[in-house]
Image (tube, rainbow, N blue to C red):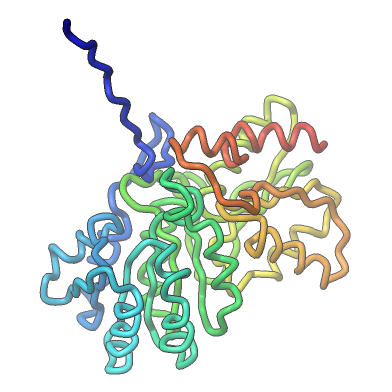
Length: 329
């Protein structure tokens, strides 16, 4: 008697794509942008902790094999080596997953790179909730860890346009940087708003009299989608994109907060220690009293699963943003 076979279920939990099904995307924008700037700057080198394919560093590796260094699964050694390269005039871009760059190699980033102010660019893939592999790979607290590190510039890009424009500015920046990398097929949305990335600056993408979304990273894309949806309810929503988390453009943010609009901060990061707390602190120190709601990940270890399901569960989806505004007004 034969035993019936059971079809084995598969999961796409590791696929780090948050693009909508019909959304315009650009493949590996970081790798191609790094190649472009490297053509003009021979001092640029690339390093990877055995994750070149999964951080789009393979694009640079294949085009510049003599300027690429495979460091293996040794993130501390990779950042130490990058520091040494910077000391002799090279400009390293060191890539790995965000969890390993921040949790595992923080001391090397802090003392070998940030303390002497070296031009080392740390590129962290899978920031926040951009993978369904669970807490071992979800860097939900990387901003909280790194915002306290002196001399470090932190960039959280929205899309491929942000990444393409940020890379040459990070290379030209004198001190160390940390880029929250969106890799693979990355949505391209900001060019529809006449946007230009400027390191250290926040940009208003659309105005609105009722609601102000203060957003960073992929959540700017969701804020723009939510603002468009809210028009059907005759709710006029503005979107202020904050791609540089540190140093924070407090001047622009505070100017936007000095209204009676509902403020919703949006970030692909835990509620602890990221953009939301930075905005609230800036408002408090400036004596600005305003209504602030937060769309961010909870202060807990997250579940594993498919990204669309997890974004709905933890409040990062466009539907969740729209509902939060509707119930808060």
